Each structure stands twice: as structure tokens, then as C-alpha cells.
Image (tube, rainbow, N blue to C red):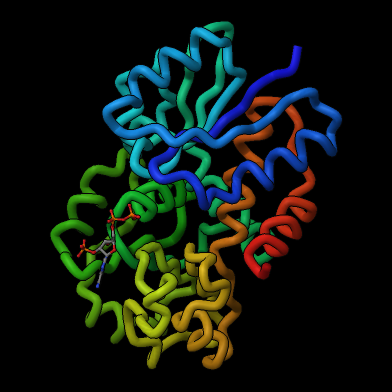
Length: 276
Ligand code: ATR
């Protein structure tokens, strides 16, 4: 029987996951379909029960359900539980088990540049949900230092405090971070600043950026944010949000099928969609 996979979100119309994942399902000749479902927060619990009743094989959840879904699952893996957000659910013999592939997706996307973080000083910009997934997962990689800068410094302090994995971390104001930017090997922009339509905004000044650094932005619309354009002009290596998106999807696909898919194919598909 044909299997069903899905993504639940609200709104969901602009999700690229169906295009990306239906393509690899057919590429690996898996008899399955991946469908987007618009589910309002009020209907999340009912939707989860419905998916269980029909025996869905697995699904993704996106904004605004990543935290709200946790009480409706049968189990949640430790990392996702500490992050407080789930983006991937596996149907394990009738039990819905939640995972978070966002952080690992981000880190896997850095593999071409960085294999070990033990000598790397990393700066995360932002302290929202995306920052939390990246920060907690990165903390497990034991970087030399892992600092956070945020407009509201207390939120960065709270995030560091909440992390169950020991790291050398400090919370910085945006101004402090800009002044000390030359100390960092990796800079990760996790806020929505610079996303379409506000494409002329950047979160911090890059005047002191180390030209040897790797600068990442989790935004993929536009592909080149002003932040990345400025970083590239300073000589840094840059990476946009397509890699994190592709790898979080690849890791979800692997959890459902046991196959780690062809990420090059997935990336080309996403880029074709974004450039169209
Ligand atoms: P997400 O879950 O997508 O990461 P979020 O939880 O709303 O989003 O977090 C948004 C992040 O962007 C926060 O770090 C926020 O800073 P505050 O904690 O100070 O609110 C940051 N942010 C949003 N708009 C900003 C702006 N105009 N200037 C600086 N930081 C901003």
C-alpha cells in the first residue's frame, strides 16, 4: 500500500518540503506521497489523532507547531526535548516519536568547511527558536567557545542557562559582538533580519569581521542576504540557509526510510524552485 508522509504548518502554502521530498521518494522508488496539510493551532491535537488513525508513516511539523506538538507525541528524543521543539515525527509501530533535525541539519551543512569544532570560536546571532536548535546541537559538538549575541541580552543568557550540554559560552550585546567579531571562526545568523521583504536590514555591523571566518545565514529568501553580501565583500566564506533546509529534510527522510538521500539532487531542486 502507498505510504503517506506529510508536513503540518499554518500557513503551509509556501513550504518547499513537498517538492524536495516527493522528488527523492520517487528517485528511490519508494511508493509514497508527501503532502502539505494546513492545520491551525486549535486543530493540532485532532490532526495528530487523525494521522495516527490512518497510520501515516512519518511527518514534519513547522511553524507554529514545533513546540506545541510535544504533549501530543508518544515519545520525544532527548535533544529535541531539551530544545523544546520537534520538526520530524516517526511512526514507530504505532507510536509517534519526535526528533529535531534542524540543528544537525545545520551542522551537517557545514561539513565541507568544518569537520571538528574543537578549536573553533562560534558566534550565534539571535536567541529565538532557530538559535536554540542550532546552539544546543552545536554545544554537543564541543566547540572551543560558543557565544550568543542578541538584541535582548537576557534572552541569550537564558538560552545559555537552559542548555544541558556544557560549553564555554557568554552572552553579548549586539554592539559587544560587533566590536569583537574578529575573534570568531564561525558566525551564524539565526534571526529573520534581512529576510524578504526587509532585504536591506542586517543584524550587526561586520566592520571587524575576520576574513578567514565562515559566515552563515539561515535565511534562504533571498539566497544572498545583505549580511552575506557584506561578509563576502570582507573576504569571508559564506553559506546561505539552503544547506540547513536541505539537510534537515535529508535527515528526516533518513529517519523514515533508512536511506540518506542525494542532497545534491535535493539542493538543485530547491534552488530551481527559489530561482523560479
Ligand atoms: P525564530 O523562532 O524564528 O528564531 P523568534 O523566536 O521570534 O524567531 O526570535 C527572533 C530572534 O530575532 C530573536 O533573537 C530576536 O531578538 P529579541 O530576543 O531581542 O527579540 C531577533 N530579532 C527580531 N527582530 C529583531 C530586530 N529588529 N533587531 C534585532 N533582533 C531582532
